[in-house]
Length: 471
Ligand SMILES: *Cc1c(COP(=O)(O)O)cnc(C)c1O
Image (cartoon, rainbow, N blue to C red):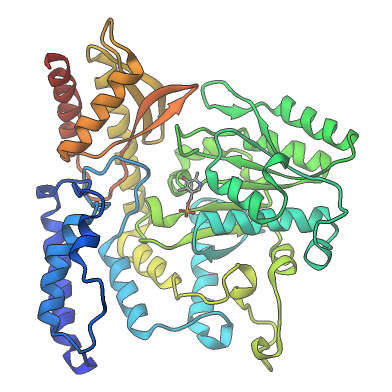
């Protein structure tokens, strides 16, 4: 295909995208594909000669599309959302057409300077203090890994990268059992090791770690000759939306000279609404905060916002300057590749610029407020429905429930209900465990979701439960 043919296919793709979004409600949310079905439809060997675009597109429709789970479906209530908005998709198309590699300021000054400005817009939008500086990371996992590496280097007085961990005291990092698996992986990759991720038990309705227990664990480790390095707090954990007492965790960190990272991957977007900010009260005392506009703000994957109180600590940990990366004559500029683990970077800030201008913060707040309100309403309706139990109360737009009519095994019945709902495909839900109990998660977060979709969820859940009992 040549660039001269691009307008034709580009228009086709734009029309396709609009048709796709308009027709999403007609499709099952979760792919109804059997394992191996897509692979079986793909030729085992690559073609030696060029094939016409018409054929490629026809195969795209017949082979690929049935194997897609529709994250942009208005009745996607599983996991967390992963929103694409038309304005951000348009920005992505422009970036992709240019495909600049924005590792250094001079490799596209617009990308760097836009990133600085957009991250400051976002900082203001979620009301972090002006001392925080932001960088766009590929994922919350990448941001958390970067934060854990900073914890390690600070604790080792910046000798870890140079000397490795051999012969060092055991580094210790503290978090609750509710944090995301990306924290475990950051601990593995950083060489700190799973055994040194200290789990602090959670308590109370917010399922946050006990602050006294946190401090006791740090003191016991210091006494034992270990090296406490940092605390990872979560705001809106993945299972049930657990929220640590961020102010309490930061106060402990200050007393013991530790670095604090706050993982608000999902919930952070909601902090553009002042009324939800009590969930991370005290966040201004943290050293590092991450949230994902690619989840609940509408800048499709990937775009993770990472804020640091002291970016110097981050660049001291990650920056490396071989001769070919030095930017002669442009000192004083930011090279964002020194702030993240991959060297190469896409121009992701453009998505934020298009998004925030096209919606306005007030427009974005309204979307999130609707999700929260509708989700709370649904929790109340399910609470009143026979056999249903709300297991964890709504945190923003996430709650968990189970189905346990009298005499039934609640775990088995809830699992059977979930399987039947997802096999039907009208809505999509996923599960987690709360204190060992099997529960269904519900979260509303897709931008095109309406109150009618929530009503459809209520009907699907309760009618499927009724059918389950009749069988
Ligand atoms: C989604 C999520 C992550 C992982 O986000 P990625 O950007 O996919 O790495 C981490 N923590 C929490 C709380 C999440 O919800």
